[in-house]
Length: 295
Ligand SMILES: Nc1ncnc2c1ncn2[C@@H]1O[C@H](COP(=O)(O)OP(=O)(O)O)[C@@H](O)[C@H]1O
Ligand SMILES: CC(=O)N[C@@H](CCC(=O)OP(=O)(O)O)C(=O)O
Image 1 (cartoon, protein in one colour):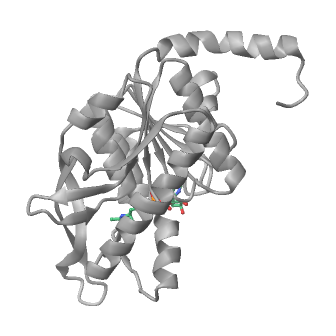
Image 2 (cartoon, protein in one colour; image 1 turned 60 degrees about the vertical axis):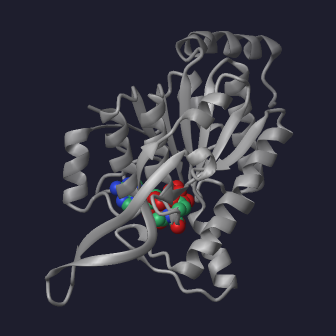
């Protein structure tokens, strides 16, 4: 705590009451992007905020990414990795590393931080309890030379098709905090690599979550002059994707927001996870920080 007076501390807590009441017993899905993980202090503060949500009778579900962490491990192993349409082209050697990093080191680090802060985190991937079944992703891209549209084989990359909530429902509401790595099983039993944002959208949609927060390393969706757009309608979001203002990793994020809204999630926001206590600022104060996407 900084040097604010005990009275101010009490006032701040009291002002959070209506926000806490609004989310009482509600499920909130938080996507914690690999770029947002940043330094150890920010990651520990993030974990503490998640435990605070649980303590105030909110049901947090954490879905994490780990793109930069996968990149570091692939580099150490001398495996070259490429992206197409914002998705990692994942061959047989790469999926082994992706699973090792996502379901292993990254997942267990977040679980450890939450547990150190006094929570009871349970680290899983979409493969556990047959939670997420996915089909192999098919994408077409325009060849820059011939300008002809062609199919791209992304390898072991999937799009979620079906979410089975049996396992999650055993955890949510029992003071256990699910921490989910974005991997799924295909119908023929293969492990598939799923974009973390897409995975979080599928989980939030299936749970009919009250909120979906996507934590990344930029303040939210930025316009052409790099200024934050505080509110964005689905229609305008689609325009910004079409005209190239929204590109790269921001495309699956915004598409996830649109999907979640269509599935009945009440509020979806993209916020800067590198900002200290981004989750608390967003949920427990009147100061929305990032980009709110609305219908
Ligand atoms: N219009 C935009 N506004 C903000 N970020 C954008 C935009 N278009 C592209 N981006 C890129 O999207 C990135 C966020 O996606 P990504 O790197 O996949 O993050 P994460 O690892 O958090 O999932 C930003 O760092 C930025 O480079
Ligand atoms: C298919 C695909 O691209 N999967 C991602 C999964 C991790 C992820 O999404 O991480 P961030 O949220 O940190 O970007 C990948 O392999 O990088």
